[in-house]
Image 1 (cartoon, rainbow, N blue to C red):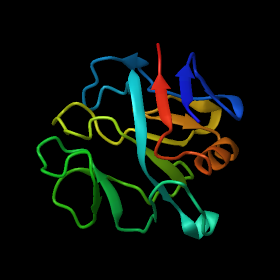
Image 2 (tube, rainbow, N blue to C red; image 1 turned 135 degrees about the vertical axis):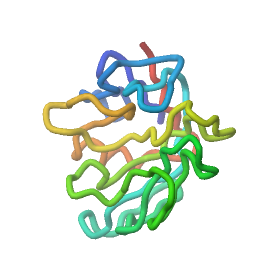
Image 3 (tube, one colour; image 1 turned 60 degrees about the vertical axis):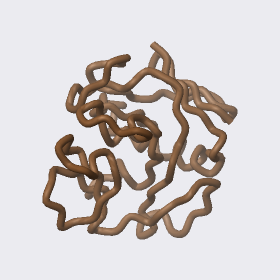
Image 4 (cartoon, rainbow, N blue to C red; image 1 turned 120 degrees about the horizontal axis):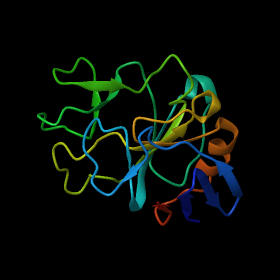
Length: 164
């Protein structure tokens, strides 16, 4: 199964659903903090989820239940830039254990991962959207009911294709 992101819709074998992308649109030249979603074809690396909210889940990709100390480094000066980290952490990082539902389940999109280029963007995920599909920091976001069905089917062969 592949996912196509185009014109604010996610298309898959399950049909189509509205999605949010970066609040400043899409780009072929992503930079940290530009609030744009990278254009291209990517795979998924890992799924993180809130077992305390969703219970135990089974996936076709490596997964990890999110704990209160889990985060993702967004500091281009860090050797751990664009990687999973645990707090306490000396560099800038966002927390994965959020008080809202946005990261109850998230899929890491393999953007700027092998190799990681400092400043080219970090923490590009498929995750749960904000109300009214408000634009993201650079991720792709869909409604919770839709992502719950999708994550059960995503595997190592799944591609996410983000088109203008």
